[in-house]
Length: 99
Image 1 (cartoon, rainbow, N blue to C red):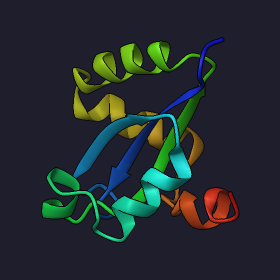
Image 2 (image 1 turned 90 degrees about the vertical axis):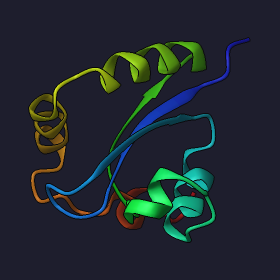
Image 3 (image 1 turned 120 degrees about the vertical axis):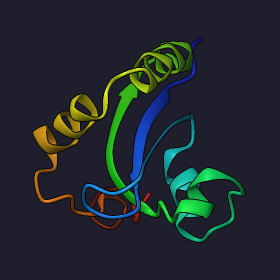
């Protein structure tokens, strides 16, 4: 049986630095990013705001989409965020905090 996965975008602020990641445990991963527990890019660049995510039934499909999305130009990534989150609200607070 396939394990679900999520592709997500973290931002430092509206139109700021973006980070694209993939995980099977979205709420836990985002909590770790927000609290600065994940060493590397997100901690260094202050990417603590979850602005977009998409669920996939299979983690492998999520990984493939993440790889493709990382090659997109910035305008495409911004458009993807603003299609569902035009105000760049923190989705952790509104969607994941109770998970």
